[in-house]
Image (cartoon, rainbow, N blue to C red; front, side):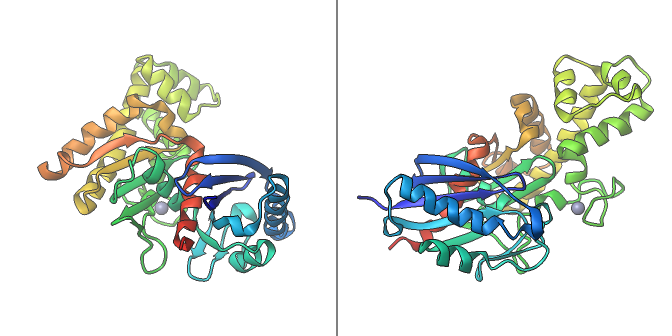
Length: 321
Ligand SMILES: [Zn+2]
């Protein structure tokens, strides 16, 4: 029988698990709540227990697995298999995740950060079409990213390669949680889109449902902004134009630097679909030189939230003999 992969996508509210074939087809999946109490000390034991429980349930043995791969928030040391600074898990001190999980399950284990594994997933089984050079960005609560070149994730000297959210797109722009100004994340995350809307609403004098909602103190989400824009709301269209300009600028410069076959946009904000992608592509074309413009494509992610478990599982392929 072919050996399997086990992928884990660890997040602040749930941990998703999947058993896959070595070709990346999901055969089983389940999830558990993430218990972040007591400095997150229950997280790894809960994961180990859940894996062992499900292997018993499916009558599988550790020897039937090539390995386990996991994506996690925080700063990851991929060599040692440790995590630190994952604040949504309450992991502030160094967590020896690899040692614990290998000891607890008897299966080889590899780790990387969540945006990087999502990039691997989209590259392998999603919009990346298994091409060797692919960039992935996820527009959610924040903006994350991962860069695959020559079929390898780029990590950089301090593990910061692919932090597309902190590419500067507006030097005089909003302050970012990282301490600098005008990061892509400040304008293209879900909260960033609303921030741009509030800023443009201050100067806007025309008729707009978005303007009225913001002025009335209603809860406005990035989804609302895109929906209003699709309904031709004047201010909402201006907001979408500004946001997609910043995204196109970042994508253009990534394209000019790395010339991947695709820059893939995923995450909650990308639910706006072609309405978003087409506008980003227009600006991307404006900011790229001809050879890049004609060879690098701007695409929408295809895997949704399965990208994480699939990409995580692919980390374990390094253990295949
Ligand atoms: Zn930043």
